[in-house]
Image (spheres, one colour):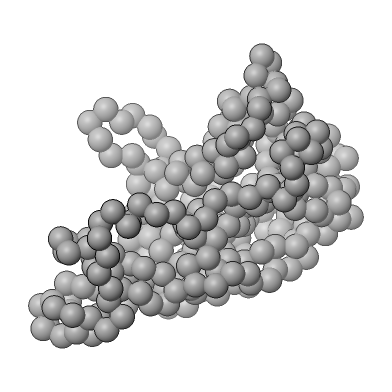
Length: 265
């Protein structure tokens, strides 16, 4: 069966990666400037685009599931020994977002489209002095519509539907007290977090049509995805898989190719 907008690719091409975390300054300069890193609570951008019919409930769900998760990210970064210290910054996420974030702009095209955030230097400087840190790790979850490939999970022909999908994506940045972004993780595939839509290949198959409907995942389905633990006979990780994978991307991106000057600590 052929679908409009549906492309076929060899399986070997599925391994190509499109984006990676980016340092905005040299790694030597980064190490010199950020010896003590403050990790802020996970934030939500409620002005971002969510087309889900239960958009308000999606934000409430994320707020509930995000609660307390930054402690795990803080611990993962401590274990890298890449900083003199990594400190968890306490605070109410919505209040911190309102105080620290000055706005955002859309960057990139297609699968690499993402929301870049800008920050309030005065608020950052005041918070950095209070917390005794050199910079902040800011993680903002936001709704975005961008063109992506979604694969048929059943088909053996490696088919996908290229279309516009609504998702929750992540922009993570290390920000200096001046508001300067020193490191950033965003774009495709690094910023992917929670799909809100999926192509219903099965419906198209059984209805003998080439039109593939794009549907929204239900609120209970999203909740189960956010809470799902790692599967496997020997897996005992009680932490939700989707958050662990996100935090591994962030911690791995921040330590990739860097020396660990505090490894003996």
